[in-house]
Length: 616
Image (cartoon, rainbow, N blue to C red; front, top):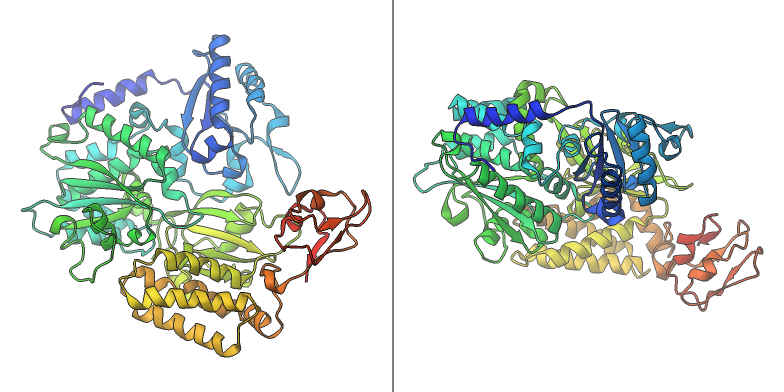
């Protein structure tokens, strides 16, 4: 790997790579992020390599291994460029036919994605309903690069934004461009990124400054940052290099949770490659600018998503928040000025520099510009990562992109913002997704988790689940958070067991407001959101638990009884899955449940394809 010593040498390398590329040669793109590998992508890769080599097709057909492409429900998947043909849920045995079809310039219609509304096959990836309403500025680049091949990134315009700002020699101009873009931090708080950079740039540079990439993604069901780290680590490195130049910082830290082994592997390789090219370290591209990055692994503490707790963890101390001021831009790591942004925020920086802040600001709304990546999971047809313009409605995300509910159950609500977020009911799905609207609705943007729930979900149980998570993740430093979350969980537990009273329901609401108003850090201040939002929109479910000792969602075991209705066709699937052997019946005849033996595990309800298992 040649070391680049000047901006001219960088452009010369980029020119050689572009000259060697033939965009007409078909390329088989296999998505091999964590979800892809878990679904069998590695078997596809082996099969593709074997067939291409044995048929001597490597000069006629290229193979690219990428990170996640977003449509997790369709994994393992194959994309054929430049045609744009998309094959979902591909098996290793089908790779032979795909390679033969690519060699002949044909399409295998029997392997295409079938539109759930029309029942017709759809060839182009961009025409699939899951992708149609997305604006994929970050995720689309995952498809273009192999994350462990830096030349792939350079060939696709990577590090050209860095070369541009270094050639300009004007850090303040970079800050102004980021301010003009209107980019707000994608980690959840939504603080203007350009303003944060401006504050850091004004700090004295005598002892050095730090930049931090917060990759400690702790929300259950959220994996946006992991996907970008795995699929395009160089985009984040380039963003931090630009940030270092703009703010006068000379050191950077990647703080990534240890539970992301593939992300850590790809990031480690990317750091080594960037350093080898001379894009990290001293005198980058001969401009006199020096900046280096190191990787710190987090232990997965949810509280370390809060920036002051994250700083203490980087310093090797217990991850506890501290009072502010002073703010990190004034006194951060080792007492030096520090600016922290999350993975998605940093990945947006090269896009802003290349396209211009004004163009970036045209996407989304006036106060909420650009795109946002969400992990769309739960009771929905099409799960995965979606990148949408700010201001899109929940209705469009859930029904148009996500495909609507699974089965006959109606969608009841969406939880946004992770454990500290809130539940928004279906009658408010016309709500635009932006920082201000979600806050007004009693939720938050968070890092981008979006969990869809249907009628089989108990909202009391949802609040209890998240409160159990939060009480375990509270650092304990602040009394109201430590004891308040514990007591809220106990009150929710009593309600779910039929032991609640209306007086205790009032106590729960009062306690939630106290925790929200008196906790020290962001975790405690938002910990009450699951309780307050479910009380705001689903109070009738709480009352049903208390006054009628009934769980409308059929979830709380102490308040439900399982039975089988006349829709049963006697297939026996429920009996096979019952661990207590409480279900009996003759094949092709209606089965029955012995309420004495029944442990209310819910297995029978899960496996029944005919909605014959009812809960009362």
